[in-house]
Length: 197
Image 1 (spheres, rainbow, N blue to C red):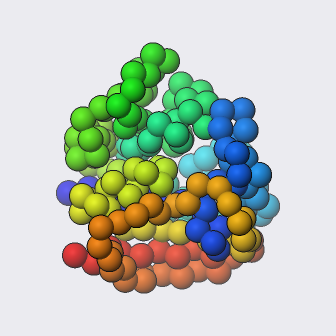
Image 2: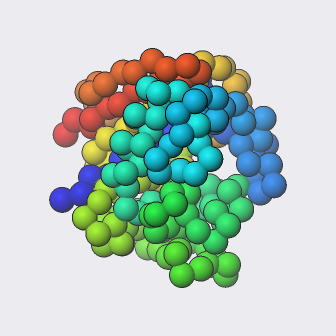
Image 3: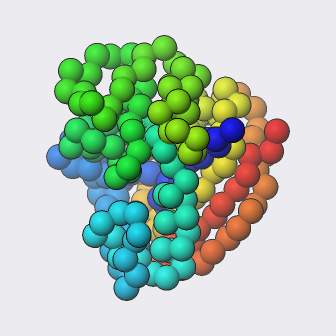
């Protein structure tokens, strides 16, 4: 069965955006969270235009190749300007989790309004045996609450943003993680955890 994974660039103080993110403003004042995508000499084999350090390319591409569908929340969808009608992943279908209608959906995007379990189920079906990626703090938190997450990857950027959208929201109980791999790279440390059940 496919796995459900969350991989996010995050500041040391736990933010996945800076202050005032939104449509036309992207990550707000937190754009440095993605600098490591473009600061190396190794082109990504999955994402055109990404040039990462060699260790980052190994980690990033290995994760990206696993993903067949992505579940994103409404804030991420709006902040990313609907992903241009596509998906945050060049080959993966987007499942949008939102209780509000989304009139701009394209054939690569599916709206699920009935909760995280249904969104993950739709993503598993769309993924064709590959893994499901989660995007956005609210989506990841809901999936953790429902016991649906198998792996959490933090691409931790050495900056304290001091504000923005936090990666994790309030959880009803502790979630234990087991470190699978820690890879230091220029401008980022990749921390790969398995969720313990």
